[in-house]
Length: 302
Image 1: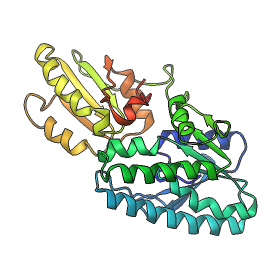
Image 2 (image 1 turned 180 degrees about the vertical axis):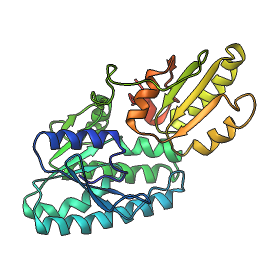
Image 3 (image 1 turned 45 degrees about the horizontal axis):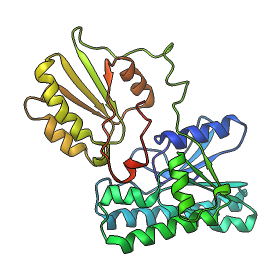
């Protein structure tokens, strides 16, 4: 598996890799490397190879592009080195970016089959993240790269029926696409085993978790909480996650009347998320309409 993300942090990649390993397959994951993480390790039976590239959330488009290209180049060289020692039966490439498939393309000479795992339709994701910068021409380029990558592999996997329809409308053969929905790990989110986080006796606890991005509307959530806490003084808002929007949320939470009532916990493990949800009175999913959110309803919190 090749993924431009940290592993095992991405829940979809984590669940798919674990499912394969538990089914008896040998799995190697190539991912990004954060400071302090080992370059190589075995995690729950999965061989993890981390490349010296990091994410730069909230950066301008050129920085994202440079980051994608750096990871793709490093992944290409590493994949060839690993395959020379022992060929792979399947290379499973996660998007974005779609052109990361090119890092695994030379493996076809060894008979390796290619899977492209389309986490989100790239044109809609680009529109939501960069507000359509570059105009229609850039969107057409992105659509072309996406559709050609999908047609160049043996199988496409995507997360929803809406995403599948997007891909078929752009010319990807329907018979090549399979939908694998995101779902929680039943071993982590098990009510019988989860110990709720401690809380104040009279606290009314509201919880949100996920990636903190403009399209997910966490700033709207804080605005709404400002109105609520005037009517429910015991209300407390706990937000778990990180992303481009986190600096703005910190500024909002530092000002009265939110100070001391909104808690931004940053990135935590899935086990802590389960414990936080078990202690919640209400959980909130505040998505903005428009762009990719017209196609996707994130199921993380649900």
